[in-house]
Each structure stands twice: as C-alpha cells, then as structure tokens.
Length: 123
Image (cartoon, rainbow, N blue to C red; front, side, top):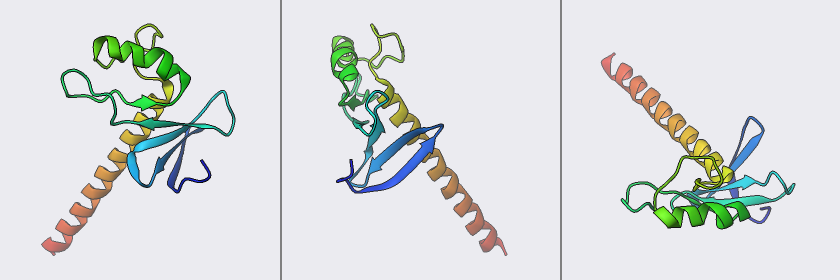
C-alpha cells in the first residue's frame, strides 16, 4: 500500500478506507486478520443480471471463496450477511459506506455553495 499514491484517508469508527487517486471507485480496506495489509475493493465490478446494481469485488479470500460463488449462482446482489447467501464481504460493505458518505458530503457541499451564490445574487 505504501507504493500507491493515496490522496484521501478517512477514519470512521476505527475503520480506514483509502481511495486510490486513479480510480475513485476503488478502495483499500484494511484486513482485520493481517495487520498492515489491505484488500482492494472495486465497487464497479460484477453487475447483476438486470444491469442495475453492481455487487463489487474484493481480493480477500472470503469474497473469492464464498461471496463470488453466491453471486455467480444467481447474478443478483444479496444484502444477507449469512455466509451461505451473501455476495458482499465486509470489505465491500465498508467501502460502500465510505463511498456513500463521500457522496453525501459532496452533495451537501454543492448545495451550500449553490445557496450562497443564490443569496449573493439576490443582494
């Protein structure tokens, strides 16, 4: 992870998610079991059969051994956390939470900027 150019690091309740500058839909999420290691999560991989929702992809063993086979059986995203049904590992879920947080912050900042411009124009 040191060799990658990271432009943003965020801590949410002790969980770090790092976004690689070259791909804002790819996150590095730390491993819980291996200190100092992180898993690469790509949010825009593995689209469902309806072409509507992305399941995501992670390079952790749990995703490749359990989640991906579950996804490949149905080609549908499962929100279940039971190991026999889930299609997203905890790293994907963490990356999605961080992505959603960043989106809300971006929309909120944009809305504030618009409101300030409208008030200035009204003066």
